[in-house]
Length: 414
Image 1 (spheres, rainbow, N blue to C red):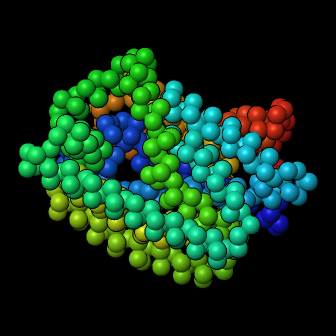
Image 2 (image 1 turned 45 degrees about the vertical axis):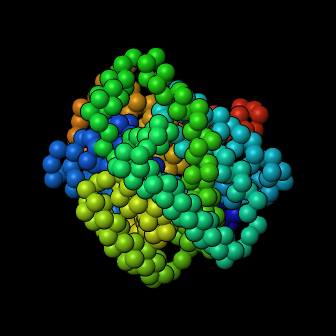
Image 3 (image 1 turned 180 degrees about the horizontal axis):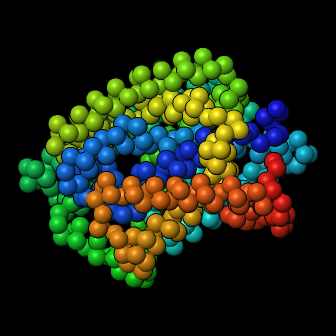
C-alpha cells in the first residue's frame, strides 16, 4: 500500500480507540466541576471504588488518549498533504483551508456546546506543524523531545508561582491578587469550598442561557491561554506522530517483535512512573500543589512513552478483517463526527436544558454513560460508512475546505 496516497486502515483503528478513550476522561468534565477532572477528592468520589477508578484512569488513560489523538492528527496531516501533492493540488492551500475551518468548528463547539473543546487548539497548532512536514523522522523526534523538555520547564516555572502563592496564603500575607491566583489554582487542581461547588452545580443544572453565560467569558480566553500552556506539548505529539507515520510504525508496517519491544519499553517505564506520581498525590492529601506536580508537571516527560505503548498495544491486538476491528476502524474514520456527537449527547444529558444529571452521578457511575456512548459509536459508524463516503461532519468540513459540496452517496472507499 502506498501510505502517502491511500488511506491507511490501521490509522483509523488507532484513532477509533483514541476517540473512544478520550471520553474516559472527558466524561468527568461533562458531569462535574472542573477540579474533579484532576482531583478525585474535590467532587464525586464517595468510596474506594471511585478512587480506584480515578487511579486506573490516571495511570493508563489521563493524557494518553489525548496524546494518541494528537499523534494521529500529525500522521493524518501528512497523509492529506501527500494525497494533495499526488493529485497535483497545492498542499499549502489544502492544509490551511482545512485548519481554518477546523478552527471555526472548534470555536463554535467551545462557545456554544462545551468548554473542553480541543479542535480549535489542534487547528492553531496544526498550522504551525505544517512547517515541519519535510523533516526526516529522526529530526522530528529530536524536535518533539525538545518541545516536551521546554513544556516541562515551563510548567515547573508555573509550579514555582503556585508554591509561592500557596505559602503567602498560608502565612496570611497574600494580597487580593495573590488570593485570587490561589483560588484559581484550587478551582483547577484542589478542593474548592462547598459554596463554589454548589454554585457550579446550580449553574450547570440551569437552562441553556445560564450555562452559556457562565461558559462564554472563560471560552473567550481559552484559545489564547491554552496555546502557550500546552501548545508545545501538542506540537511535540504531532511531530512524533509524523515521525511514527514516516517510519511505518502507525500504519502497522513494523515487525511484530518491534511493536512488542516498544510496548515493553513504553509501559515498562511509563506505568511504574505514573504509579509513583499517583502515590505522590495520595500522600500529599490531594493538595492542589501535589496534584499539579504529580498530575501535570512530572507526568509530562513520561506521557510520550505511554502513548507509544498504547499505539503498539492497539496494533498488536487489532485483527485485520475482524468484526470488532472493522467497527473500531469505522469509528476512527468518523472521529470528527463521533467527537462532536459525544459532546452533543453528553452536554444534553448532563446540563439542565437536557437530562440535568450534572453532579448527580459518582465518578464510577459515569462509566455506565461512557459504555453506552461507546456502543452508540460502534453501532452507527460502520453502517453509516457502508452507505456514505464520509461522516456527516467530515463531509461538511471537507466541503467547506474545498469550497464545493463533496459527493456523499456511496460506501467509503479512500
